[in-house]
Length: 133
Image 1 (cartoon, rainbow, N blue to C red):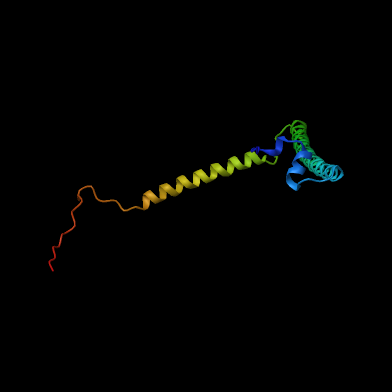
Image 2 (image 1 turned 180 degrees about the horizontal axis):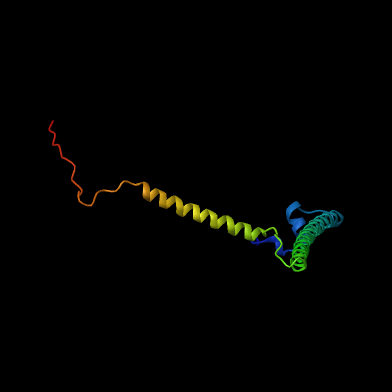
């Protein structure tokens, strides 16, 4: 009887035997150990990468927060408003709004440049020319 389906549910030693055929227990153990090591290395690499990404995001957030705190302190200390750089979200919002204004202006210009038919002159049908062979 042949079993079909996903072999990922089987133990790693059984998967090795199914893939490479009968082998000595030492060979199976070596293959299982090598596969386990590769899985562990990949998982560790993925965890390190995710930790590095979290660390970078934390540093960026911390730097932005510190910059805003400095700007707030300077504004209060100078009793005025200090210019600050807009956040990427604010910049993206401003760009989107500018693009929408540009699109509306272009639509208005397109509509204004279309020739209008005078109200007093109704549309006339085109002449029809009958031809015979």
